[in-house]
Length: 338
Image (cartoon, rainbow, N blue to C red; front, side, top):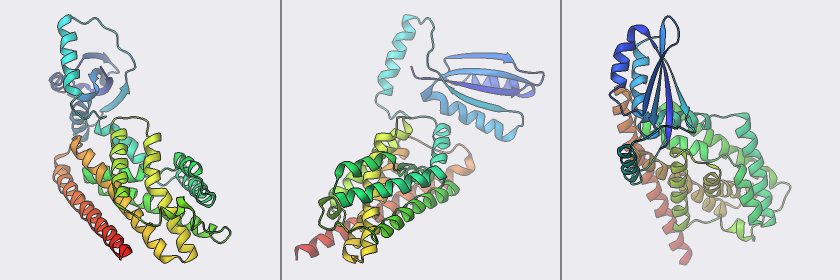
């Protein structure tokens, strides 16, 4: 069992009502201790899949009453004696869980995603370094150098944040995430343009030339990258390798766009811009779909309707954008054949 520990500091005047309500949720174990003259501490051991509904209840309570504090802690190990019936029940639950998308609670996800949506010095430095390395990789026509740059490129965070905020209808987070992504792209394009003043454009190199046009396989790659990125986030898995996938879809065409603009190669710039826009929208669309299927929803009633509207509009808008880009891709290929 994957377990977590919820610690709730509850004022005495609300203790009986809150504990009575908490007992209705599926919990593994439950402890109460006196924290001070004014508050009691409740420790709730719960399976990770059931954490979110308990946190949602406690969040609602803390929004209307003062003095509450809630912590969520990971549980590395839990030892207890189980009966045969309990062991069999656990096996059955594990079989059922295997058929569902497993994810962390919305509260955990929101905390980590908010961090990745901010413009920080670390983000700026990593974008600059990855852009320089990719540019040099294109000049050397080295696939290994280009892929190596993907390891340090922080492109996964803001793109996934855009999808997550669209699901929740959190327009403040959506604005910050979009600004962060735009900020990163502008830096990469600017660096690529500047480097064209000092270094030759590798227009004949295979790695460079492959990013000056787009086809349907690139869209499929971006959709797969976005799906993998969203699954890694909600499952709390290491995002390093998935971050490389997303960076491969986003960073190289951005560098090529900057280099072609700097050299005045407008036809190639159009192709790389089309590739970049298709990849961004495909990654976002895939992530939105994964987050929707996994059941991520806001808890406050006033936010539920807004989230439903935001989710529908986001899916429609991004889907239409992807379809328009695919149409442009097919039209460009048809023109090239003629």
